[in-house]
Length: 179
Length: 119
Image 1 (cartoon, helix red, strand yellow):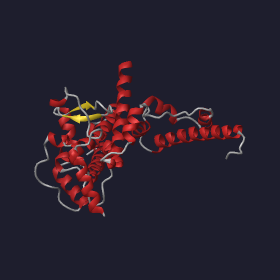
Image 2: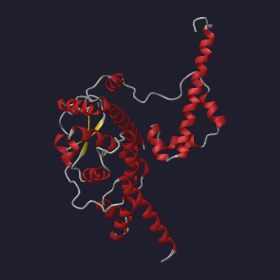
Image 3: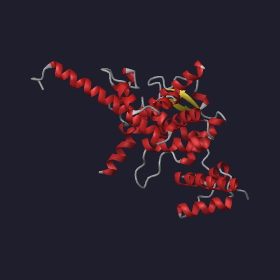
């Protein structure tokens, strides 16, 4: 083994560590790093203290259309697009950085899961890559939001300009619980 | 405050503007040099060529740039309608900061496609 490949491996391991810490599942690690499955499993256990979740990844573009999820994914995707267009690095590197910037603006309550988890953000990019999800501009505020192609030609108003009626109920319930 | 001579008030305001300008430029440099250049570009809403110029300016050059009676940075949300949306009471107040984030990031994406068109 020559010197360069050792450095490569160190770099890949560090990158995998960052991905795992951000919440990446095995499927993400296997497709985005060149490390073996065995090594990734060990790394995962050492960092998280438990085995990675088994089973299929959540794979539904409709998830991103639900109002609150849509708001979170839209912010993340705008950040990702900007970084990806300016950096010209591997998409996964821009994704990692964009996810950090997104998390700064949407910190989750201690003990709660973020609305948009890292692996979910990764699947969002799979959907936009194959045009199963696109961007649409809100006719009221002008912000760009994630949308399914079937809505692209309709007049769109985002859930922040016109919150759905069920939104307030949920927020009230949360406020009530915290008292 | 009322017994101050108007000229004193104006001088004080100009001094405050100079201070704000310099603080802004110093913060920009700090974000660029101590963190990630691309993340700094995103946070500041400034394109890469400008980031590269700001990065290498000396303190005396920053002071020179900051010394004017006008504010050097600009409100990035420049539509009164959008400012109204972002500040009015909403049933989902807890998410309004995300709305601001979406508007700003949309705007910076627009500026990017504008640059590409120019090329």
